Amino acid sequence: FPSHDSVLLDIDRDQKQIEAVFAGLGLIHWHAVELRAQAFASPRGGISAAADCLRGIQRNVISYRPGDRLLLATDGVTDQLCQQPPTRGFGYRRLQEVFAANAQLPLDQCIAAIRDRLQGWQGAQVRRDDVTIIALDLK
Image (tube, rainbow, N blue to C red):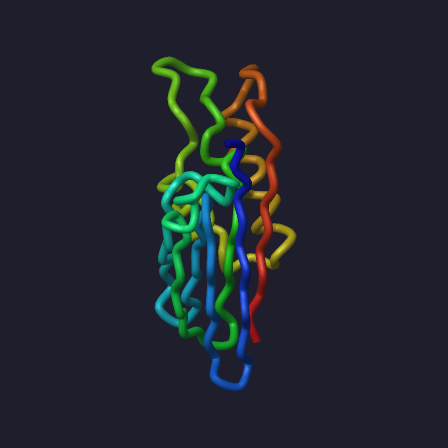
């Protein structure tokens, strides 16, 4: 069965909590006060018509402070192969590192830095999949 990545965020601004339900992709939470990024990985597989697909859903309750930031990226980012051998994917670790290194920049500059790093990684390699990057500033 083909599967689809999914994420649902219920942001409670009064409680400063996010209920995040995701399948097939994860998210990264930038803690502005601690200057650190925390990754929430999801089992691969996404949502499909398969009877057991709901086992791949991950649920987390994330507490945040105003000034924190969330980053979501599709597998087109993490699975993108590099130009230089050995050929390997960009991965969540690199995504988390580049996000953490640029998370204090204005949102558009942070996303541009991630995009630039990904394009440098990709080089002349063919893009394998669609690329979607979403970042949210939390208030």
